[in-house]
Length: 200
Ligand code: SF4
Image (cartoon, rainbow, N blue to C red; front, side, top):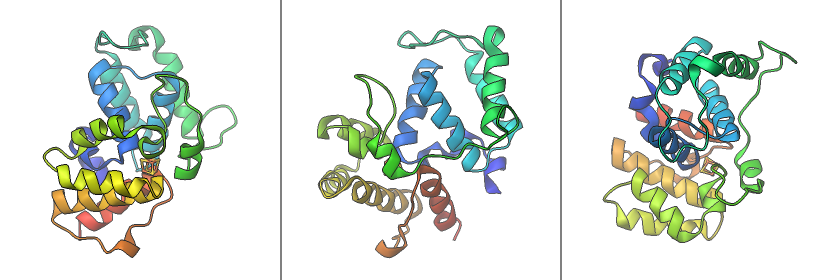
């Protein structure tokens, strides 16, 4: 698909806020905690990254020194076998040989996060203050849109994310997606729906 031609650094702006946040943490720290790294890898597989693309992505990041806030100090040199195994496992090439697929939004919303644990759904897990911080990074200079999104998520996390989807499509692609076409059940579907509308 169109994904393999563009690197992750060109498309992350169209990731849903849950994954976008993990991407930002990874950019800052060059590391992710275990569960977050796992969830991000499964997402990358489900939006169409091949095993080889995925391995070179993680190698490039984990060859860098961990940032000062990083909670993990593993290096690619020392731990690459572990990482390669766990990524191959996600693609169904190791162990049980079952491919792992991304969790649904409803399952992600129900996750119980430990204090300061990265992950989950920002529309379900973050208070208004933290959610605004995440949204400001994703939608800089769009305070009105952010107010609408904050208002919509009071109805449900899904409504908040749909409002975000709408605002992102309008901002980046000048496309007003009809409400009844904003339909996704998991973070990968969110991204693939953006891709579908943005190439119209
Ligand atoms: Fe991610 Fe789904 Fe939450 Fe949107 S509603 S941020 S896609 S978990």
